Image 1 (cartoon, protein in one colour):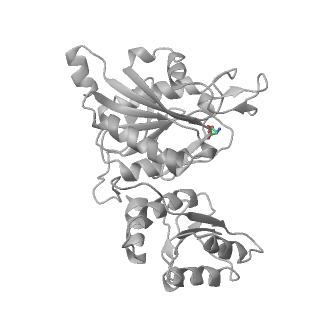
Image 2 (tube, helix red, strand yellow):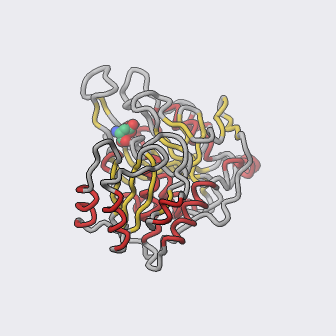
Length: 340
Ligand code: DAS
């Protein structure tokens, strides 16, 4: 039911809120501090009750899927969230879904949901940088803007969105770029839009989601192990060897610059590929892509494009759940998803 339908029927649209914890649900452990707090303490219901004006934006129902700091996110919680979100989006009475989530790994969960859900209705994630009992908490305004976006017809067909500090971001482009400020998120290529005085305004039309790497939830119970190796001056091969010995199916190398790899480490990654491990070359640099260079192709690696290491890891985990994966097939997924 869209807002238009709802207004015609005289009822506000219904938004389903899935709460998972985070700072937004946190309480300070030292009065007045926004750095000393416990995440995931306040319930979703209590968070919604604390937002002035929320009941004028939508009817709400909420489910507590988890109550954790998102630094503790696991693939089991991801699976719980994606199943709950899928159920809610399938309900014809629900206009849109809002997921309350810690900011630390929000971009990873956003990609996970974006790749598995193929509903046209909006799914909007939000959180907060300050705990619920801070002097000036940012959670209430973020929740209100997220709900306003979830009932907005123009937010449909855009995949998973992250609404934060009034900006509207697309899952595949958003990343956390400030560890403490309330405008913690930015997108390469700029945000999709902004919530202006309660009205979501989009700066570009919804792009076609056709051909995006939408994976199936059917039979998805476990995600394969994929580790991230961080590139740096003086790097040695030991961590690559240890990850392979620990059973990694895939590795994401957060290289320097354009995804470059220390010559002491490259042979270890090439050996991993020869042993059946998928290796994705990403970059530790905040902006800019890793293109498919001759060197990357020659060693059998995959170029991450615009996917940062954390998001590349999620995409690789999902790609490896397909038993018949090939290097070329995974490269095609990265190209389509990161450039769409
Ligand atoms: N406590 C962290 C988390 O849950 C930070 C936050 O939410 O802002 O991700």
